[in-house]
Length: 144
Image 1: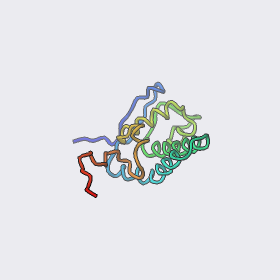
Image 2 (image 1 turned 135 degrees about the vertical axis):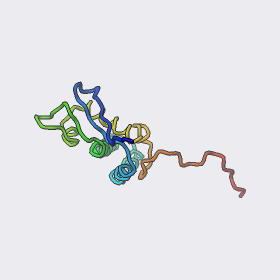
Image 3 (image 1 turned 90 degrees about the vertical axis):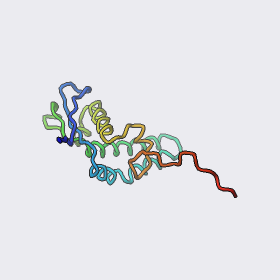
Image 4 (image 1 turned 60 degrees about the vertical axis):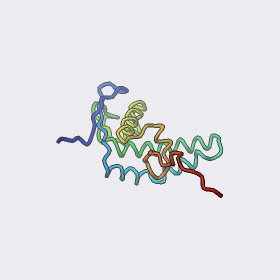
């Protein structure tokens, strides 16, 4: 049996660009959880606070940091593009790369991680698992 630990994707956002994202594995899942631990809780706390521009700015900052973690964790390589004459790294892509490509790479990483954008936002910290953990409604209420 052959197994490839990464998936090569042809970019739709940047013609001629290909990138490789790592597939999820048990060890990589643990690594991702370790890296996200705390950040998701902070984001949940901030978004539960009073509405206003300060909350929106803080939530956007935290979400950006979480996206940076996903990108560093899941992007193995990029070909077909240079930034300022240099090969692209996850950091240079985040800092200076075309935003449409960054968003496309993040979508691919989340897909390989098994998380859609909505699932990622709805997952409770510290776990990145979105499996249903509540009772299915078949429990009965105990008599008082």
